View: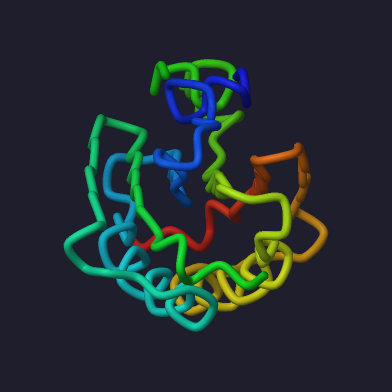
Length: 87
Length: 87
């Protein structure tokens, strides 16, 4: 996987477009069909952890969950306020 | 990004090779160079959260951190015991 393409595009460089972003991908590969799918619960707890480090506006959080037979992938995209950056 | 290639290969199907795996990718795109890089600390707390849901053997956890100018990517791969699966 290309890290440079992780966000689908290169980081913006202009000051106007300056944004901080945090992307979380959680993938759970299950051996059996009945494996517990704990990703949605995990997502809430991980967001709580992240809030200890940065300011997270609920309106700036996008979550998508993709469930397949043996693989669940949870993607969380968070746009962070640049003001939250410590300089 | 192709979800099917998330683990670099398709999930194994034979019973012998049955494994549960959890992969976590955390990417932090910083607007400035001095942005706080909190991913290593976040990693520990996220592992603590995951341990509430599944049994995690420290020897089965692989962590890599890739730091670039504006982007840090933390990758955590955890092999879960199949016995930990609730059936």
